[in-house]
Length: 245
Image (cartoon, rainbow, N blue to C red; front, side):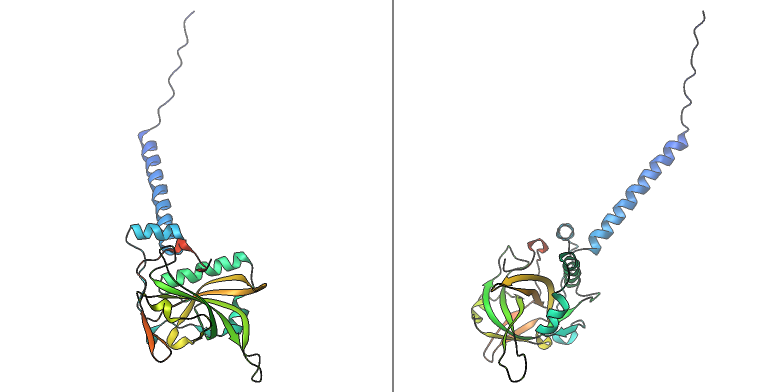
């Protein structure tokens, strides 16, 4: 009985493999483009910032002075509380991402740009280290003081700030004392909110804001003391906030 010999399956034409290779290359190019776009548009993500830093493409902070800082809203303690205290942790995370992106990109799109104002009583001071968002510098923790009305003495208000100064002056931390009053205004201080959180203080929940001045030059303390602040050259978004853990 003669054997039946099956014909070999037809081979795929050459253009099939050429088309497949081009489709794979196109997919790879699209994925690479979207990844690069995500990295460059979201430098506030610590991993993205680290990649940009290694590529020497990390954004550099602009040296603003008082006269050319971006337009923003100045708010006192009571307005800050109303603006930032509410909201879920997820909403605060989104706000903090925008605030940090704004800071890193020199407020090209000044969404939510807020300058703090008011009187704050210092309750903590320390020098910044290599484990902080930037160094060298000094950070001051202080609580807002508010007068309920013109006939009542000012009293602590549930808003606490971390005022972070980028400075190479090693003596800057010694120029602030616990109990001193820090008076902050939009001009000349230009202290911008970069992080929003909540904390416990004396068994009460308070609004905790991290602020960084974005107008550089001499920072005056009283009438006889000052130190110079300059844009930090190396940032560590992975260090996170708040600064006082």
